[in-house]
Image 1 (cartoon, rainbow, N blue to C red):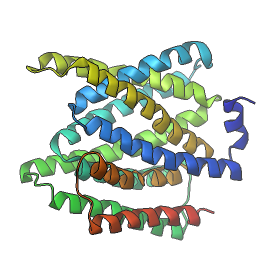
Image 2 (tube, rainbow, N blue to C red):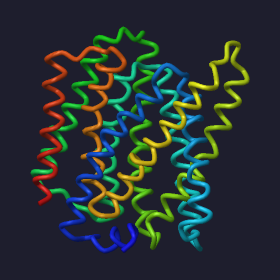
Image 3 (tube, helix red, strand yellow):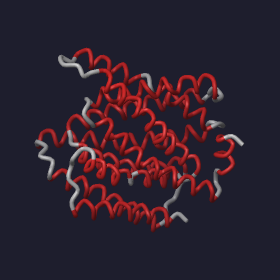
Length: 303
């Protein structure tokens, strides 16, 4: 049995639900790592361009030679994904330019699941139980609390703060939009890996062009070697992270997967502390525990 056949076989089963849970939590850790790679030592536009170019090139032979090609309306779905993800990436890069990673990231990730649950309710007819809504409230209170604590310590100027937070909220909205659109796309494609391979190929087109134009305008240009290395590393992480969450939304509820992925905020705080030398004190540990507790309630309430 191929991997595609296995995914299709476990859709809607308890085994599929357990697999979706594992994939969503894996995506959470990997997405936090992906965000840190984009925010690290390089300009976020250049990092994103290097990552997208790398995963587009990696996906090329798989899309052309391994998986079935899209047909009919699947091309329109992929085109919509390209537009939505491009807007999301532009908003994210703008937000990272103006705000500290540990301020911007929690606001983005806190806004995303709330909108995703609401959109999934309208689009897919998904319903959350009262316990799950309580879990969402607990998780979001922890995420926004973490953002508030980090904001208080960030020293961001008031003028920059409003723009950074506004961009973070807009980015979170597009997280919800791409999550539900991708769920629609991967469900509408008979072979889920057709959608994944062609998504990464098409999605790798726009940002390298933007990054190349930005690089040419720089007075002091960063060395290409470390940037390429970051791009390749980020591409591998992106395949695993975005691929995992897309598969999770095919196997189980979109809203649940979206909420569970936002435990990435906990991983982001740990990465900020261990890698980016940002502070993690008792308040942050308590808020991270709150986020985890909210995710547990969402999962328990859906059983």
